[in-house]
Image 1 (spheres, one colour):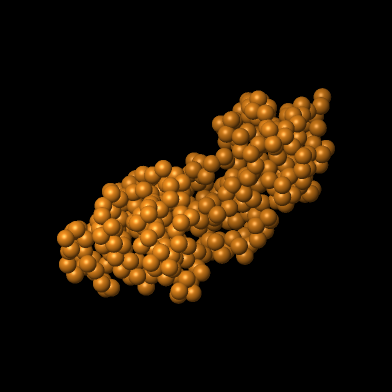
Image 2 (cartoon, rainbow, N blue to C red):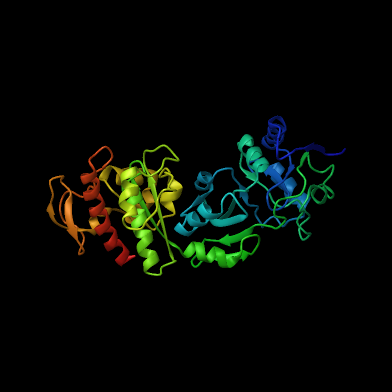
Length: 369
């Protein structure tokens, strides 16, 4: 009996076909699906009989586990524990994409994880709502299939369903990186070069967080980026985010004006939310107010030793009429008021005072990272 084949167009993928494929997976069937790298055979790993069938079909040793494929990065923690900062950096940079990460399994041993950069694959995984593994659609030891014809040839009549979406985008297998020990190890160099993996994982990431990501955190980000450039540092990544914001908002006009005076252009800035992913990938997290620190720790308790109030890195001399501490370079701040208040809706003078506090604090941060 021949395998049922669904021909799907990337320009207009019919949802009914994607849901049909997902239903077959959820019920224990084997389905050939495209990814951006090569075609794979997807199966619900929660079904032991189906998983055993996949091992037999591929002729793969039973002690060689398959990698899980997920539709969103947040699912990693369903499978892995003790996820290192470097893993989050690589997810942020390369997911969805041709990168498989080997992490410590939540129970024991290790687990491979990948988020493919393929609309069809992601939707099928999402609709299946199962633990999906998806090794390449080939007999173990044979070349991985770059198009549907190569994928279906050895398995026609042996899998339950197959999606024909033409040739894959990359035609090269994913790069596999083992992060279960330090330093990380590139197990297989694929579509992403080992040199780029090591460069990204070694970056020191500084994240500034405020409320709306339109003023204070933008000021700090712009100032630290400029300082790093002036110091010839290309090993530091500087980001900003907000705990409460509408995605895609620009920097406030007063923020743009103050940064322009420093030769910094943030006209292209667009706000982003401070989610668990961006927090977890950051080595140094600097917030403007105590409630933001509390929010960060609720989202990612494991970053407790990496989150600070920005004003901790400033040395106050006196308070001005706005209640903002005038500061100079020096040791960590010792006063009780460690908040840098939100200038939104306040006067240009208040904005300028806020900017001054942030600038001097950032100068101190630039000296120690």
